[in-house]
Length: 133
Image (cartoon, rainbow, N blue to C red):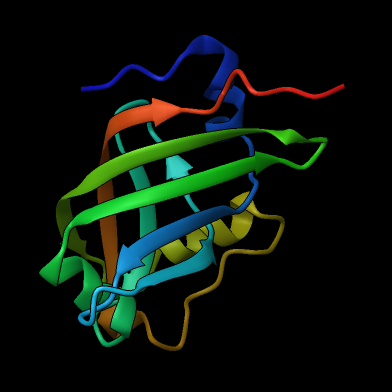
């Protein structure tokens, strides 16, 4: 497991958006803003098993995640990783938890029956030392 440097951990602990990059079947990148939560070992995302991003991850489990500090936009962290495991989440529990984390209420998404939890295991971390004041 790759250790997240202490000076960058706040970017994983705060409820800010992550840009999750995956690889499409034709080799082109696909990047989308996503809610996430970090548990100290994995970066967790919620998604459905019916969308292109899930198919991208099934075919190519390596990802890139970029998180920018909204208070200091030149400060960021890039985490490269791999999908370690996928857990079914037909109640939408992670979605509901993330909704609360990001300032909403606990809700069950309408696509809950298709929801999965994606556990990303970091394999490389960079960028955290970049600052511009």
